[in-house]
Each structure stands twice: as C-alpha cells, then as structure tokens.
Length: 275
Length: 258
Image (tube, rainbow over all chains, first blue to last red; front, side, top):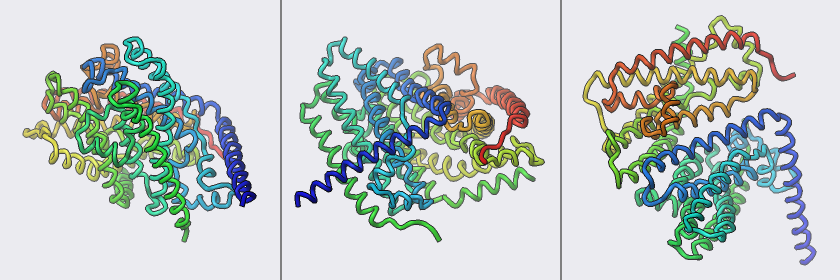
C-alpha cells in the first residue's frame, strides 16, 4: 500500500517535471520567431492599455462610477488582467481545445506518458508579458494612490497577490469547465464567448453597476466576481470581513475540483473525429 | 458579375453556421448590455449632455449592432493564411486584382452578418430597451449609406493589415491593435467630444469616427447627411493606399515553406 502511494507520488512529480520540460520546449520553439514574439508582446500591451483607457477616460470625466473611484476600478482591472495572464500562460491550449477536438489532434496527446490535461497545457505556451506589465503598472498606480489617501496599508500587497492567485485558479477552472463541454458539444467557441470573454469583460468593472440579475449571474452562476470584485470589497473598502478572502479561495478550490472531475468524465467519453 | 458570384459564395458558406451564430448573438448582445450598464450607472448622478440617459443607451446599442458591419471582418481578409500557405502567389497572379476579389468576398461576409447578426441584435434591443427609432426616411437612408461606407473603409483597413503579413508573417496582432484603437477613437463606447483633448484631436483627424461615431450620430438625428462627405473622402484615400500597397506586394511576395 505504502509502496503504491510512493509510486503514485513519484508519478505525480514525474508528470509535473515533464510538464515543466515541455513548457520550456514550447517557449523555446516560440522564441525561434523572435521578431513575432516581441511584436506580439508590444501589441498585446498596447491593446490592454487602450482597453483600460476606455474606463479611465470615463472615470476622469465623470469622477466615479457608483461610488468607485478610478484607483479602485483600476485595482479591479489590474487584478483581473494578471489572473488572466497567469491562466493563459500556464494553460494556453485549454482555451484552444476546440481545434484539437475538431481535427482529432487530441488522439496524439492521449498517447503521451503524462496526463492529457498537462500535455494539453504544455502546448503552444504564450507568455503574456504585455498583459503582465500592464496589469502590474495599473495595480502600482492604483494602490499607491489608495495608500496616499490612507485607504489601504502595506498589508494589501500580499493580500492582492493572494487574490490574483485565487483569481487565476478561478479563471482556469471556468476555462477548463468550458473546454470540457467540448467533449459533448465539439464546437465551444460561442460558449467560451459567454463564459470566458463576456463574463470577464463584465468583471472588469465594479459589479455594482449591473442590474440584479446580471450581478447574480456573475457571482452565482459564472462566479467570476470572486476573482476581483468580492475580495475587493474587503481589501479596498472593508465592506466585508476576512471571511471574504477565505470564501473567494474556497470558491476557486471547489470550482477547480469540480472542473477536474468533469474533465475526467469528459475525457472518458472522448470519441475521436474521422470518417 | 465576379463581384456577385464571390459575394454570394461567402454568404452561402456562412449560412452553414447559422445556429452557432445565433447563440453568438446572445454573447454579443450581452457585451452591449455591459457597456450600457456603465453609462446607466454614470447617468444615475449626472446628466449626459446632448445625449441624456436614454440617448446614450441608444448610442451604445446601435454601435454594438454596427460592429458586425463595420468592425468584425475576416482578420486581414485572410491574407495572413495565404502568406503562410504560399497561396498568396497564386492569388496575385489571377486576372482579377487582389484587392477587388478579396473585397468582393468580404461584401458577402458583411451582407451575411448584416442579416444574421446586425438585424437580430437590433431587434432584441428594440424590444427590450427604450431604443430610439428614427421616423424619417432620409435618416434611414443616410444611416445605411454611412454604414456601407464604414464597412468599405473597414475592408480597406483589413486589406492593409493582411498585407503587412508579407513582411511580418503574422498580422493577427495588428488586427487586434486596430480593433483596440478603433474602440477608443471611433466613439464606440465614448462619444468623441468626451475624450480628453489630445485624444479627441487624434480621433478628429483620423478615419476612426467614420466607422461608428458618424453613422450612429446620423441614426440618432444629431448629424446631417452632409457628414457623409468625410466618409467618402476617407474611403477614396484608403482605396488609393490599398491599390498602391498591392503594387509593392507584387514585388515583395516570397513563398514560405519547402
């Protein structure tokens, strides 16, 4: 029994080591096209900045949105950007699973000596420098403004880091659940547009601006609100207690566990394409 | 004739995915709803200039619909893939001008998106929102003209983005960069007069406002048909650039692969 457990433990370490190896190989292959890499990094940073500018312009002109200042809204935005960048860096092709399902390319991954999910995650790694730089920049601006006003203290820095990590797990779990739906639906582009793109866009703004049904949807059904807005209520405004951070972490963990279970069921149902 | 054949083929190809596109419309309508919520929240404590709380909702709603005509085209008109596969060499050899044939195909795409995306989302908004609906025929005609010119300018822009792939091999990022700039400078979410002065100046001297701001203002009856002169001038200028670039592309083309 103990030997079996030890073997399992070794397997897990081996898988993770393999993931690390494949991850690095994927980065190296991407760096073969150095110009494209830096060009795309520059472009994605610019896109992210312009996106934030849209919100910033409105807040500079009108002062606040439902009581949220530009510094607070910037925090919500920066946290979500960093979580998304982390999720998309470590699990790029989970978001792109549709092409594997449509073409049958997933077959090749089934033969690899490591769990299919890790094999998938290690493919086409995209390092999101642009978004990371932009996210950190906006967070630095927002948090220093809030600190000068005496609204938050230094403790908020580790708390923010914790929120970003939980958020990355949460976004990954939502992404994985959506990807897993592909085992039943095959085409999931439209579903992703709702569960990942629209939901995340909505969470870039304070959830209090939305009508009740939409807020309920973003907290209870696609719980992307727990990636920034809900913990933000505690970190930025003290409107909730410490329990809010634990609740956010629990929501992320439960969703991750659920996603992994559903993934197992899904992959056991996988039927390759072909004629 | 070539125009009609190519456009119809693209239209027909899209028809295969009608069901999925209808689901997609829900997501698109939801995006519009997010943007409207931002303005509704702002309007709770202040007046919004000449638009007012109701006007700004119509403004954003109409812009969200017109994305499907004036913004969401095939990335770079598909030139990037042609460069990757080497098909670009063949396309440049055809007796029809590359710009003309790609444009014809794209008009089919736009016609499809108008019928199966613009119209359903517009209908949904007209039902659930207090949407402004013009009563004069002149407004409807000039809005339609403004949208068609916007679509044409967008085709030109995407042609230029695609053409960049001959030098950079991938132009996907340029597409998204153009999209992001357009979101800010075209007045898609924020009417141009509310941008900070330097940004407003950049926007006024660019073609971006003619993609969203001008058609929507005409639709809302805030701008006369005379503004279309600006759209026409920009369309002509962009056409000239596209034709000029094709000349350079012919000399630059190199086939990838081995």
